[in-house]
Image 1 (cartoon, rainbow, N blue to C red):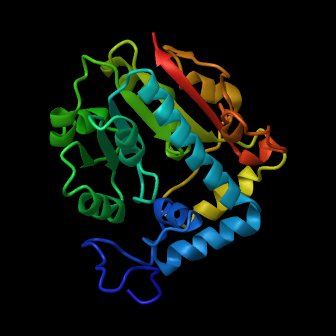
Image 2 (tube, rainbow, N blue to C red; image 1 turned 90 degrees about the vertical axis):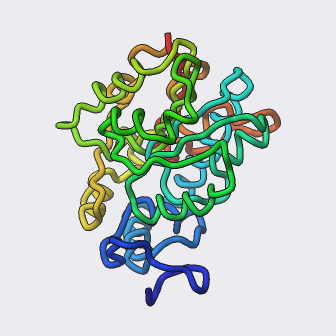
Length: 273
């Protein structure tokens, strides 16, 4: 455990190799979290070198997540499925949703052992939130898991969250087809909130990020705007459509941010037709 940024006495979950960096734990580090290893911090620092402003990218992504969840709560959604939920940090989906609607139910999904272990610890006393240990590219494994069956009523609208997960799905896994399988399992009126890395913008060094991430267990596949739009097939995009993270409903009193292309991520929310 030497070199890990962690609370005293915390144990490394079984099966975790701290020498292999993880995107989820690097993201946790960029957000100021404490559940990461030295290898994860080294990966995050390498990304910071090739992509200056990556901390801003992470922060704007997290802020979008909060706004999207609150939008769905205001639309009447009371159950959420968070794909590739990552390491628990302040501002988790259940914290946001249950503060606004105490009866909201949340199912997280991840296969990173650290993410799963800490999520279980965090949610141990929350009857309306749980985590599924599964690969999101296997929808049946996710939707048939005990926590999903207990907490989600698929005959009613669900808020499906795919925040910074789509760009980890390789082309051979057919991302659009995968998203369609989740869509088909959801009731009309459900929502999809998504963010996705792109190298459409000159400010984003997609090729360098891809090469840097090859040292981790998570390869990255940036996509164009048209490719990201295909993930919303069967959904009607709500205003303002597919934009960058800081441009999606920034809120009253918030002035328009400059250089929004530096967000690095497309962001949008769609309602299932």
